[in-house]
Image 1 (cartoon, rainbow, N blue to C red):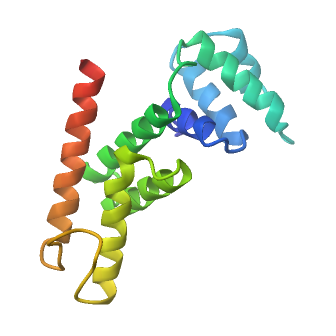
Image 2 (image 1 turned 90 degrees about the horizontal axis):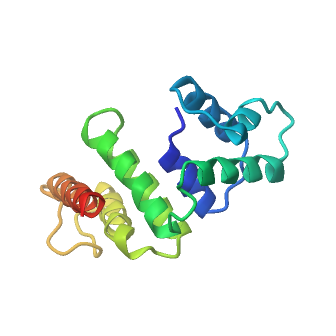
Length: 164
């Protein structure tokens, strides 16, 4: 299921709006949300026109008062979602870290996500060899624990940011 955090991240990264936007609108309507833009977006059928869908998506986000979420915050929200799912076992944690690494790259090495870029490549190097130069003191015996600890710290910091 496509989440609002994912839609915000896609908007921030300027990825084409297509079937995922339509599915997102349908899911929101099914959960009880309402709005003209959501209804129009949910009723779109292929072939999709990115510009029409993006406009409807943006109108829906305005109606939900989410139009002022910064690109960095949108990517961090989606990263939190991915990493929390990985930590909970809903997905593979290393797949989540890889996706967050891609978000970091796509958003010009976003500072808040940069540790996951480094950890991804540290882990990747350690799969092939005994040393890596990305994360101090990380080796094959502790890289998984380091990744898990960094994910927990990131999620804790994001929880504090949202509550404060």
